[in-house]
Length: 111
Length: 347
Image (cartoon, rainbow over all chains, first blue to last red; front, side, top):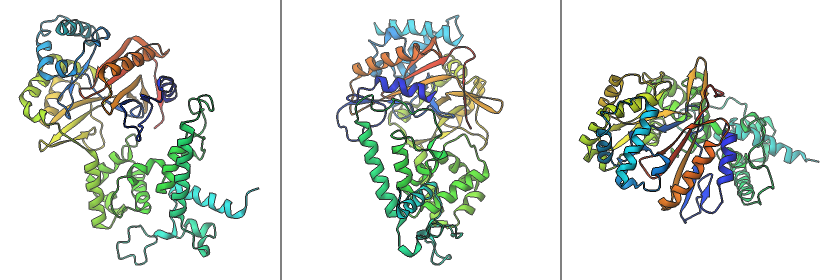
């Protein structure tokens, strides 16, 4: 599995701004495609968990919302609470279908 | 044709990186803290007849380690196509096979620290007086205790250091043991952002929200959950076993409320799940981590491209690929496998 991801990440890396690992000598902006959690009992933050370092919300983003997404506005606890409050009466409680409802509300929140 | 001197050096370095004891670390007076466990006589120098030549394995390990690191750096800038893009399937470094250039960075670390890859994180902890002999002693203690073999070494050590017995036996010098415990604790701590204590009531409301509870229960329903627990309103530590050797699962809203009471501020899920005696990984996961102010708009482009590639992977169910904002500065891309597919992970 690591091999499959390694191949994908290496094909995406351009060795200028996208790297598969930390480029310690680089002072220019770049992004790491980090696979370090792809291991036995590897972890990642749940969606709808807070990030304790920033107090921002780890949140799912529907593809159509990516362009308008502003973390300083939309990933705040207050914004998410307002959004979730508007969903409380939603009949859809299964996680995946509900994410669609959440996504719709999110995209309306961007307008 | 390899000369006997070179052959002896290579054999000595092989044992050095495996953590075999070396003469240089034998305490002169075992009552004093010289930073090493007692040597049993099976040292590298005696084995290869190096003792009369006043060799210094530590220095030689550092020299060859640095050289190996340079080779690794050269390989990184070689033209595409010079070697396969990913490591071919073959035995791993820990099994005694060095696959050039893929294993060079790990091999360099092993040579520099004189310990196997599994223990490098401990050797790099930077605790004053923690020699390679003690590193190996602690590693062997953890292995003997069979403590949570699926967790990284530092987490396993943290568990036995809280237990006491095995840890104290492996590291009987009190002050050094205290320094290692402190190093382990500090290593597991993450600073708490300023905003969270200020918005505590908001965080409380957030985690009491029925949809937030439902979402976290859903994500933890068939796998272990980990938490970041807040301490002294200043830092967080990762908690994933409770009691010490039992991984945590959450299945009811009461579980979430209980962990919140104990200071949980973050909820984490694993990339796989336990099935009987096995661990099945059932999703692809990529973490996009921007550095040095990488622009958000460019990050979104990279995230969408990674999302597309994960979605198109043959194992992945395209209907179950998620793009998450991490709440910090990056994105996660998670691609769940098609129904019934999994990768069996070796324990």
